[in-house]
Amino acid sequence: MGQLSLKNVVKTFGDFEVVKGVSLDVHEGEFVVFVGPSGCGKSTLLRMVAGLEHTTSGDIVIDGKRVNDLAPVKRGIAMVFQSYALYPHMSVYENIAFPLRVEGAPAKEIRKKVEEAAAILHLENRLDQRPGNLSGGQRQRVAIGRAIVRQPEIFLFDEPLSNLDAALRADMRIELTRLHKQLGATMVYVTHDQVEAMTMADRIVVLNGGYIAQVGAPLTLYHKPENTFVAGFIGNPR
Ligand code: ADP
Ligand code: MG
Image 1 (cartoon, helix red, strand yellow):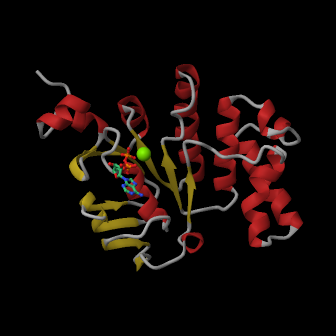
Image 2 (cartoon, rainbow, N blue to C red):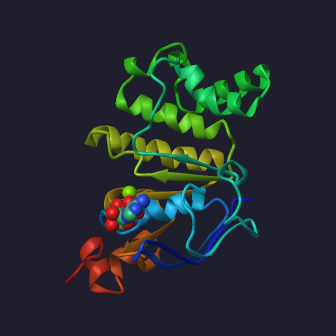
């Protein structure tokens, strides 16, 4: 469970082709990072996987099933955004519980799942507080908690650390790697930050202008960039 395939996925906005035929198999439990400059189509691609954006052509396949026409909540995925959009008037507990309340889960089950997520994210002592009283890193953890309680097979992250300062980003990179190991879920992570890609990914997908420029393990891309774009972006040009 948690296998994702993109098959010649295309997205156009009017006449503008933003994603130009992306194909990739993401394995169960893999941490794949899409990296590329601003505007190269990362968010659009992720939003198609999430079902937040219609796919113009091509197939999105999760665990062998084509999901193009499946509602977002039925895809077994949860997405974490850059702007974590917490509810300011709700406690941390209620923010994390929110997706379960929407689903109509029983109170006992909600409590169990929220407490589990809070333990994983070191938020046990913050559950009664409002988001406004938390640090940026803690807020981003609450947003991740909201994804965890849904127990998705696949997590999608869209630049979740870009609102944090450098020190916090470094901490959160380690936290996210730990979270991936602990949950064993598939993670698809989008960023324009090469350091995040190099330190967290099992495999990196370099996107350039809607195309895949190269796919490979971090060190492979670093030492053996296949083209000048990859070399310039993360490679080691000589
Ligand atoms: P990235 O996340 O890599 O920065 P995006 O996927 O957000 O890139 O955007 C890729 C391109 O598609 C950009 O040129 C952007 O302006 C354009 N784009 C994104 N969403 C829309 C939309 N709803 N309508 C028209 N153009 C869009
Ligand atoms: Mg984006």
